[in-house]
Length: 74
Image (cartoon, rainbow, N blue to C red; front, side, top):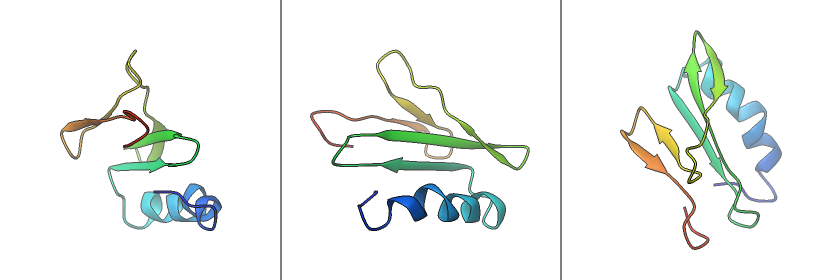
């Protein structure tokens, strides 16, 4: 969940920590103001953008479910 005070850290340094240190398989961010939802999957040690479905949903392999914005909510 992004906020004005943490968005740049969440999109930059924090994403790199989850990729390089924790090796977290999936990384997502959601901005409740702009409704931006982005997701990444770890491939060969690097996060790759997840391609949304035609409906705008993002698949999380780790969770085994889709994430989407519906009526302004994640």
